[in-house]
Length: 61
Image 1: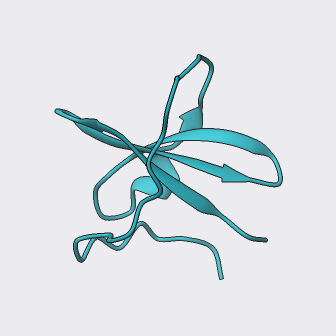
Image 2: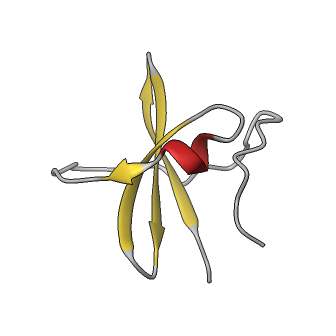
């Protein structure tokens, strides 16, 4: 499964992830993947995430 991340909010910090199941709102913190929720909304532009700043989201292998 390929997961693509995008910058979304700085305060509080959230990222948007896209995978085979859709779009997710992911808290940008350690183990944040386990606290994700479906993203429902519209965004005019998202920048690809290039650096996780040392955060371990706890992504599936």
